[in-house]
Amino acid sequence: MFAATALALLVVMALALARAFLGPTLYDRILAVNNFGTKTVLLLAVMDFLSGRPDFLDIAIVYALINFISVIGVLRFFEYALQKTVEQGE
Amino acid sequence: MVRDVISWIFLLSGSFFCLTGGIGLIRFPEFFSRIHAASLTDTLGASLILIGLMFQAGISLTLAKLIMILIFSLLAGTTASHAMAKAALKSGMCPLDQIDRGRQPTIKSYRDQDIT
Amino acid sequence: METLIDIVLLSFLVFTALAVAKMNDLFAVVMLSGIYSLLSASWFLDLDAVDVAFTEASVGAGISTLLFLASLKLVGRYEKRTRYRPLLALGVVLVTGTLLIYGTLDMPHFGLADTPVHQHVAPRYLNDSMAEVGVPNVVTSVLASYRGYDTLGETLVIFTAGIGVTSLLRVSRRTKQEEQRNVPADMQQQIILRVVAKWMLPLIMIFAFYVQFHGDYGPGGGFQAGVIFAAGVILYTMLYGLSTTQEVFRQELLELLAAAGVLIYGGVGIVCMILGGNFLDYNVLRHDPVHGQHLGILLVELGVGITVATVMITIFFKFTWRTVKHKYIIK
Image (tube, rainbow over all chains, first blue to last red; front, side, top):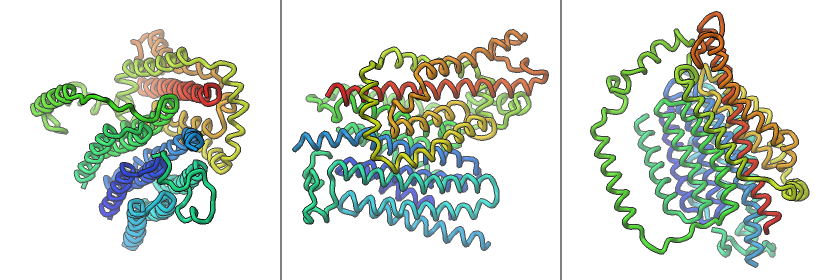
């Protein structure tokens, strides 16, 4: 049961990685990284139950937090830089 | 036994939704449709998988932590996709179906811009 | 099943590393480095190294990404193309790599119980930790008690990094005025993000305290707690502006706290010497050695947590002042 879920999550992580490599625009990559982070949180929660030591959920909470903060940081840092590039290209 | 069956159902449906989200991420043509696929299925799949795990945990500290992860993931995931879509809109990208409607973004379509 | 997860994670790591080397767009490289850290942390978790995974997740995927982004805003976004092909460098790297792999063929197998590295102090730590130190998490007891002196050195390294950044990047008054004038007005549009961040901030801080004080019984400890605390403050700063946050986290307070953390750590060692033991010998702190160890570990982890949190916040503030200066003053 957990093995099947873990396998499905690994497949989704591979797909998200592929989008992070390919994605033509910047925002595709940010989306892929965010998705990857969420799937990692789920994979961790499942791996806790797989290995039989459900003490690792703290790490899942930290990942969810860090994922969120990284995406917000990326967007805050680059919102105005991109707008400037757009205005200069006119 | 009943608990295991219920967990199976939740975990399998959760993984199914996550998988469809991943496939959508690869196959959709442009950013706004991809974000639609990824964030919707992400939230639902994550909630189902976490609820399935909650049935396995029983009443313990693990259950409390799983509830915390669920609440946090719901809150943070949706906010992050909102922030991404808003940032993309503000920087001039527009969905492909709104180019012909006379909308005036700063860039005509996301293929013309040099933000790659 | 675990071997399969190991193989898949390691191959993801290889692909990500190749993509990082190949890509020209430094922004994508930063994002992929974040993925690399997440993958490493998952792999550490699969190897049962929980504390290391914790630290790698918080530092590598969180703080490093943000600091890289702050510096990326100051330099160009695209890497300059090299005009020559560095074949000599490739040859040197290949030869060295091959020699290293050849050298590792001689090493004992991974995880065997009778390798030389597991014979010296490791059996003593594992067998006697519960009796001598009394905390269930052996990593914390080794880090804070058996090898407390090394951890003091690590804390000093972090403190020195903070000193270096503080002395190199100075903030002028004009930058502060510009920031106060421009940035909070820009951020008024981010209503949803601001509300959500305001809800989350107390929860993040409570979680940081939980990790700090729960480090004896589960994964955690001073380093991870400090980084989580800093991440919460950084989230608030990104959405409310630097001047708003610096009304609470003033620069003088941060510098004072960073030094205070290191002082607590060293002070515990000196108090142990005054009470008759060796430096950082916690047995003499209380009437009972095990209680003394508990008190000593609590205090030094507190010192580590305080220093790490304040230094991370300081470094982020200094970098962000620079980007504000570049945005509003140097057009």
